[in-house]
Image (cartoon, rainbow, N blue to C red; front, side):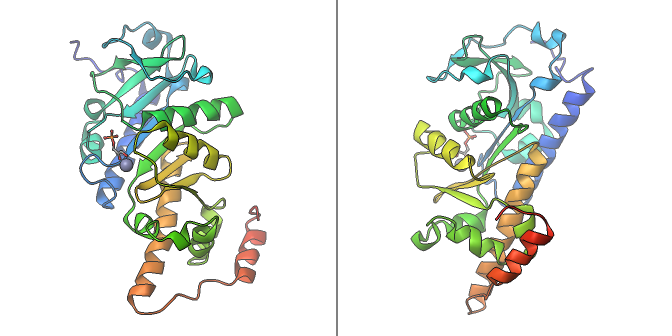
Length: 271
Ligand code: 13P
Ligand code: ZN
């Protein structure tokens, strides 16, 4: 195998991969990425030049079982299945790979740098990216991770009713209302990696940028991977404050509806 990385001579792409690696490091440091927990995919099509397009695949094509027509011509960086975020942080091109979607949109092939098979959550990730292209949204990044406090709260049925958790989390600290303005959607428990999980996620992403996968983790999207990470970080901070208050023996009051409304007006947020 050629030892030259596809990133060589492509500083803009290299920078994107460096930011993905930086976020992978944060996920590990936060304790949200035990073993191979979590995954990241980023649509990197805008950084692909003719030289890259001419590269041969390094593995046979893989059919995913679903045809995603809006991904025609798209390229992605994907964390590898079974790979650790803490390793991705140091060696992104050994713990993730660059894939291109097949011309008939029925699957993908790995182009660089190593034959690392993409994450088992690829059905959710690619379906979500397909939907972004279909809707003409500028979103390029998808992140799945296991934030401890948010997952802990997803084990109580009372929090899973529509927007109950959103309102509790918004009320813990004004910034959550401002920086996660759509709140948190909920997808009831589904088998990891399943199409049912992908479909539930797409449905919720019509209204939210972050969705909770009950008793599993969260799936967040954004224009870039740092913004997707920030939204989860902000929400999990609120979950932590709620749980800390409960641990001190009281139910936190939370900001009032009037105070949250005041935030919405001041920051021009949707209500
Ligand atoms: P992968 O290692 O296949 O990305 O899976 C991690 C995970 O969190 C599954 O939900
Ligand atoms: Zn997971």
